[in-house]
Length: 395
Ligand code: SF4
Image 1 (tube, helix red, strand yellow):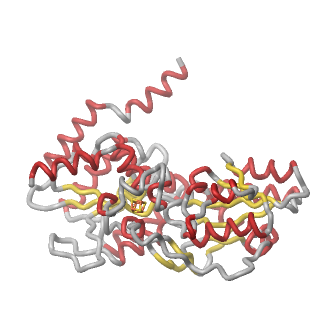
Image 2 (cartoon, rainbow, N blue to C red):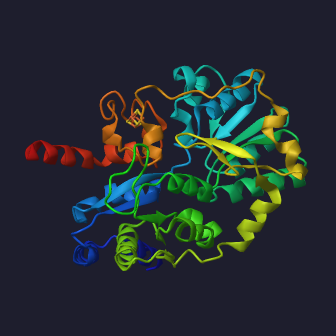
Image 3 (tube, rainbow, N blue to C red):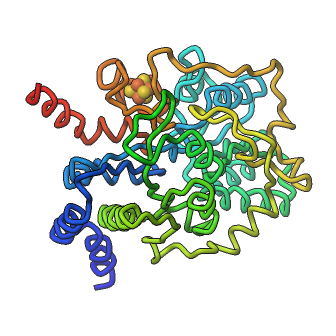
């Protein structure tokens, strides 16, 4: 049966027996005399690790460090304030994805609260939905609040090409697309020592990187080759299923043990070295690098964001609806550790309000709102409770 064979394919990458075999191989090859600190770049990896209990199958000396690979989490508050201003002050119809609706803006506002107060903010499932809303009412200005890494950039490019071809004068894009390699470079530039020597404050200790999954299906594995070349750290591109993650961990351990650093690809069923040529060409036709983009937690990173190229400038929402007042950068809630978590410096349970004041029902920071956020992963799958009780028992 066609449907069941498709499900079997996914099941194969979640097979418990195979997972136990991989866990034994990892335990056998991990050197007990050293530690392995592996950063999973993507929120999808973080969720696979917690949802399937991968951490519980790892040796004690292997630690995961969560990375910044959640596009909602890295979006600074000022950009959400700017989007709310477009909807409230300029009266546009603002279209965005569901994850963004509850992300806290300044003064405890959010897109959802602005919608409740009367702003026309609509949740969409694809860029095509935003185009359809614009076509349906030419009297309304429709703004697509576009966010995401390289994975979601091509659909925004398609929407812009279609809007331009149709002369859709009431459609524009508030562009917040960002790039993963510069973020990784920023983290690695502050990374700590390779040995077990103590890092200085502010450094994150890393021995290897689980490389982006869906992003790499678009840009390929080649853009990560600077990691071993400049920073001497191994990268293994990994899929989002638990066996993908475990196989990639084994590949990283082998590189670390051998003193090697290269980009390897575990996710060969979807990722090539050069990526998706059509999608890359589309992105470069519509977008260009902006000088700098402010990332929540990582700060300003040069050449890490995209803006619309000149032929598409008429569809740039920031030009069409300039902020009436300068939108100043807004700091997160003072208890929130999202920034340190996104830099790999802290874990969710290090935040004083994790699981008490801050929960998925009442999120204080973006890492608890987004389905890809590290705090949401820790809270949803409850592994932090197991860890907390182990610590209590050991005390
Ligand atoms: S638990 Fe909440 S407040 Fe704390 S770091 Fe995570 S999102 Fe921020």
